[in-house]
Image 1 (tube, rainbow, N blue to C red):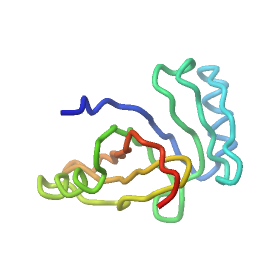
Image 2: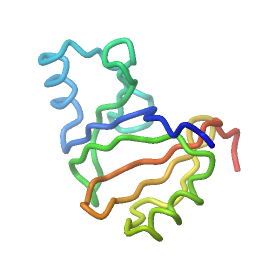
Image 3: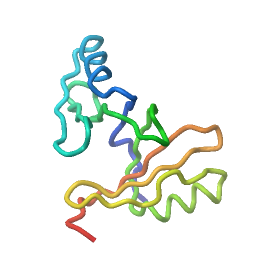
Image 4: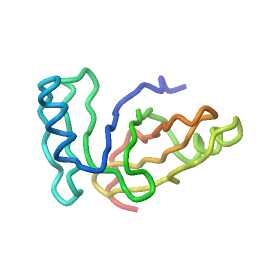
Length: 123
């Protein structure tokens, strides 16, 4: 069985630049924008313990925070989350060359992401 460790986090809000500045001023976190992803910026694990990202939310979730847990199968764990009282927010999604992920809300409403360990070449 996989260890299901936390491997990533996100802090998202309506103004990615202001949010990045806030966390830089508060904690000294340095971020690097990912080209083509609308203000989504990576923060290195060296600064935070576990690497993550700060950026802009979307029309469905303008501001949120989430942690991401590594799993062997996003589909399998989304189904398991639903069977035990959770709700799928984002089905299994592939971003070629970057990540395979999905998201759910637990019974208390907390947002949790799932990420597969392999970087997809494309599907």
